[in-house]
Structure formats: structure tokens, C-alpha cells
Image (cartoon, rainbow, N blue to C red; front, top):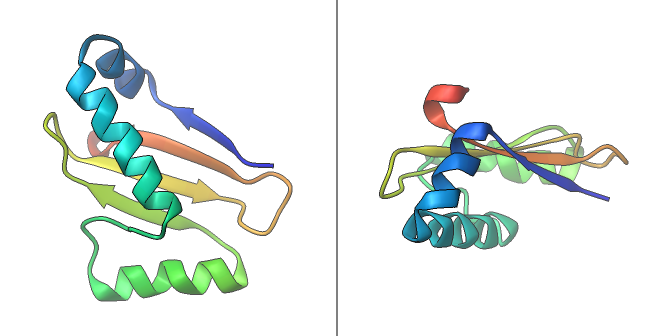
Length: 90
């Protein structure tokens, strides 16, 4: 079972910015459909390899506010979790 977390910065922005909240929903939908956002081809391939072999998924997206990262750790484990954060929070 996978869990999804967000940083306080993301949560606070969602709470008062409806456009950003919709962007985050779209980002998560795309991420779940293997849209890795603004990554080079090598980084996209690393995600594809991680899906097969386990490891970490990483994606980056530009939003109306600022760049957002989505990171999934623990692929192929019971402890899989995804975190949404601003790039500056990484």
C-alpha cells in the first residue's frame, strides 16, 4: 500500500490557492501515468528502470507558483511512499 505526503509548504499553498491545488491534482495524475515532468531523457530512463528493479522515482514540474518535485521511495516494498514538495524544500 502506498502513502502520499506533502510538505507544509505545499499544504499551505493548496489551502489558499485553488489553481495550485488543481495543478497538484493534475501533477499526481500524470505522475501515476508515468509523466515524469521536466526531466532529461536519462533521468526519465532511470525512473523506468526503477519501476522494473525497485528504487526511487523522481519527477519535477513547473507550476504557477514554483517548481515542485514528486518523489516515490520504497518501490517494490510494503513501505512505498510518495512525497510532494517544492524544489527549494529538497
